[in-house]
Length: 92
Ligand code: SF4
Image (cartoon, rainbow, N blue to C red; front, side, top):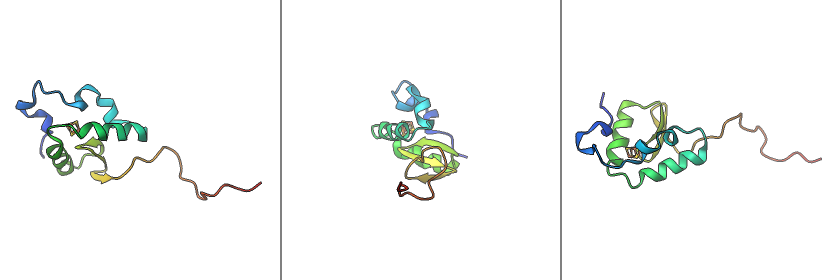
């Protein structure tokens, strides 16, 4: 199983967004997840981070600018709660 690219020796001392705000990268709020994904954009190891996370089948979190759930990239974090059965408002 590949280790996280963050364990690479040459990254010691390099400013990496997920090191300074780790909770954001495992947030429940869809807005926070999108903020974490945006922070990955400037990361020098973004592609390797995503490739390693996919290979490890990371169960959860933002890795390499993508949200992974159960080892798969998902487009968006769903808000908590049960989805509505009927999206139309009920007329009074
Ligand atoms: S790409 Fe994102 S999650 Fe991966 S090391 Fe960089 S900041 Fe962290």
